[in-house]
Each structure stands twice: as C-alpha cells, then as structure tokens.
Length: 200
Image 1 (cartoon, one colour):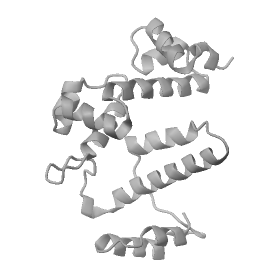
Image 2 (image 1 turned 30 degrees about the horizontal axis):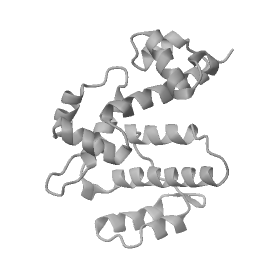
Image 3 (image 1 turned 90 degrees about the vertical axis):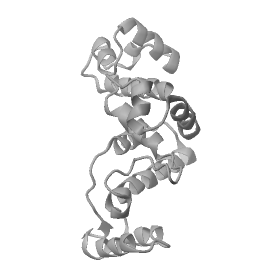
C-alpha cells in the first residue's frame, strides 16, 4: 500500500494505535510501498479466496476488488492494534458487539469437513442458538448452516478447478459423506455437475 493511502486511512485515529501507524510509515517501507507482515487467519483466507474467485467484470469487478482490499487492510490493522487485545473476534456483551458472529464464521471455515454443531458453535462463541442464527443472518444474509453449505460448494469448485483431485475426493474433503449428495447439491448451486469443472 502506498504511504499516502495509509495516512489518509488513519486520519481521525488517535492514541497508541495512531502513533504505531506513524512509526510503521517511517520505518517499514519497501521501495515506495508500505509493507507489514500479518498472520494468516480464517477471515483473511476467506477474503483472499473471494478475491481469487471473483467473476465480476468491468465496474463491478473494480468495486468488488476494491472493497476486498479494504477488508484485508482492516484485518491487518486489527492485528496491529494492541488496544483490541489478542482475541479480536471475542463477543463483548457490554457493548452488544456482533463480533461473535465473525468468530463463529472463523470457526466454521477453519474445519469445513468436521464443523461443530449449531449447539456447540453457539456455546463456543457465548450466545444461544437463536441469537447466533438471527445475527448470522443479519450479517451474512444466511443462517450459519447455509453459510457452511455455500462455503463448502465454493471451495469444492476451487479444488475441482485445480485439477489434482477426483470428484469423490473433493466431496469428502469439503465434508460430504456421499458423492451423490454432493453432486446433487453442486448442480443445484452452480447449474452444472462437478465433472464440468474438472480439468481433463
């Protein structure tokens, strides 16, 4: 990222985090760009997956990729902001934060083959099942189960297009016990059978 953009982005930020940004701009440059390492998290992984799988064209592509770049930037700054604490996805009941939804999403995508049940997931993020599903729908537009289903299918398409796995292997890898069920869900979602996306 170019330093002028970081400075513009950080306008209005005060305190230790603002000073940290200024220090990074002064000392952590590579050529004419700002560089700072971050840890790969499930959220960052999903964002990168969405960027690489972008099918939009023209102005929509530009807007989509721009928004994803900003999202990646936010994830990076979240890691650099010590004021947020070590677990930036924890639910804070005092503020009514919906960050527990993002934490639930991270848990789901960290192991799509063997995800926790809704009961287990709600317990892990500290809310009841109804609250989790309601807030998940408000944030992502779908229930936690449907989010998992969509993510599995999108990931399966990516794996099939990579060309080094069979349909049965991909189905098992993304969490389907039966290839027949996987193929049916895949065709319903994409409009084509999984074999159409495999490389010959």
